Image (cartoon, rainbow, N blue to C red; front, side, top):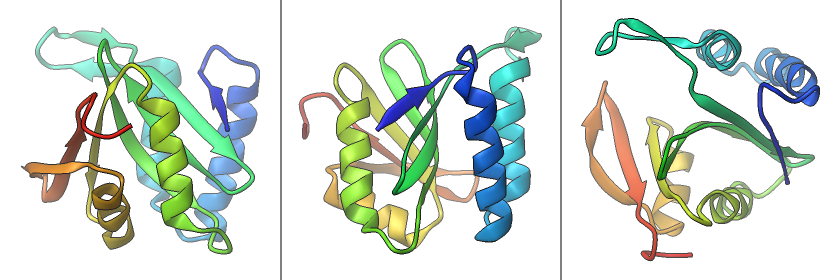
Length: 143
């Protein structure tokens, strides 16, 4: 698995590939474009009344990819896609293991397969946010 940040020359290539997958597999292209645009240009923060650059990561390999944002001690998994011919649970577990070395993990989703994968990977339900289920896995819970 590789990690790519907006500062990397590979980021544009990875972003184009993600948008092609969005078209091919009928993924939420608007949501993905928003995150890829924020990765490069920043996101408006109401609290601070300024544009904030979040630390975006694209995590990928031939079996799938994920978009995440990294904070001081927490990585928020924004989107996960695994190609249909590969095992979703296995890829999700590998990805979360890579991300959780020194970080708590957070995930917000509506997708049933993501919910199942999150439970199996040791995430705990924290509540509902914008009509989506919010999960967290704290360091030490499961590695």
